Amino acid sequence: MTETLADTATVWGWLAEVPDPEIPVISVVDLGIVREVRHEGDTLVVAVTPTYSGCPAVDVIDLEIDAHLRRRGVAKLRLERRLSPPWTTDWLSAEGREKLRAYGIAPPVDGTAGSRVQARAARLSGQPAVTVACPRCGSRATEKVSQHGSTPCKAAYRCTACLEPFDYFKCI
Amino acid sequence: MPSLPDMTTPNVEALAADARAPRPDPAETVPELKPALFEGLCRLGDSTLVLGHRLSEWCGKGPALEEDIALANIALDLIGHTQMWLGLAAEVEEAGRSADDLAYLRDAMRFRNLLLVELPNGDMARTLMRQFLFDAWHHEMLERLTGSDSARVAEIAVKALKEVRYHLERSSDLVIRLGDGTAESHRRMAGALDMLWPYTGEMFAGDGTDAALAEAGIAPDPASLHEAWHGIVTEVLEEATLGVPEGRADVQKGGRQGRHTEHLGYLLAEMQFLQRAYPGAEW
Image (cartoon, rainbow over all chains, first blue to last red; front, side):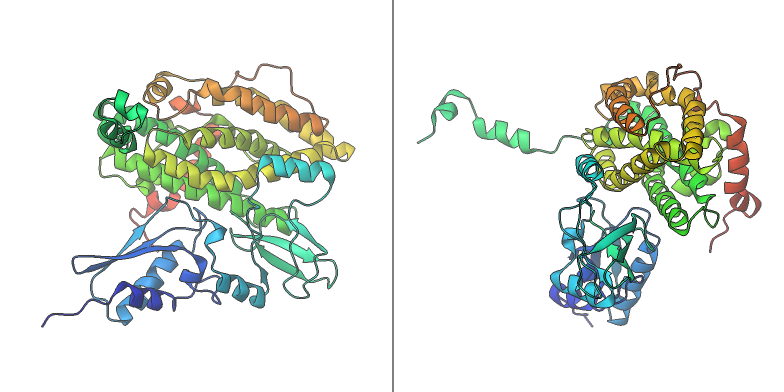
């Protein structure tokens, strides 16, 4: 019996069902880390890129993708780690950003990855380089507590209007 | 009808195709470069590994929750860079070793990290000043490596640089805040700078390995990074009211050739204990 290979569009649909282990409201497809789905002969190849190079979730993500695709009946599968071009927060889908906000994590403000010039300008002017809206009350009266938050991809912020602390998914 | 340059240049299409063709990666095609490349990759990966380990020693002991988390996050980034650098080093070496083997099963004399990063953490002033002096170098080094003729080296640098921009921004801010802070924070930052300054020259002292890699277009000559580094460091230290020390910066060196301080042995004893005591252990 010859097995029929699932077409890549179907595989993309399956991958959209795999949640990010640290932020389970978004899928690995929403996060933009799945870079390619292709067939090599009868082997399905999925290329995945890490968000941050030391992200400890990388191995768990590979494991979950592998397990989910096998549950969907994929018999031959290979995961590829792809470094280039490097992941950027611009690859977060619009839907993914909304899901983040609803979950209480402020989505990245595009094009604001730190440059030395921006950082220096912010320091000299006393004004923050980025204005991040509070995901709970929507106020823009927020301040950075620390550039490093609960995971490598997040910074710690607080809202001075509703006084809640929150995570900001920082640009990279 | 062909345009004028096309008529005067023979076979312009072949020239264009040639320009488009990917240049061969010296990391993969030049066998006599491999020993220098392995050495150069270990120098990068060992510095990020040892500094990453030092920062992880603060985990659970930071002076404030945010600082504790920040140091652990930066440690994580540096360990991530280590996996990429030593992973490529292991591939280049072709001796059947993995990145983990290189990290956990080499003795101190085989490590090629800068002496600066193996120094004990001391207080937060010393930890932050060391981080700043390293970040300023790391940032320039990675920026230059993004233009490496080796595509493998360049792609790692592009990835790592995105993270190191955040490291440098944070350490610059903290050096300024603490240097231009209270009398006590200023005193500690000034003391840390004086203690660490003699170790900074090593970052710019090249040897034969560096010359071979620079010649092949794989990595910059270390000396060529000094001007940019000095510019960043001068700007930040002056804003921090600390100023650039006048003493010689090149007194302490040898780490990149395997001559280390006694501190590295203690660090490795802790970092490598598990793999030495239980070879091949996994979890």
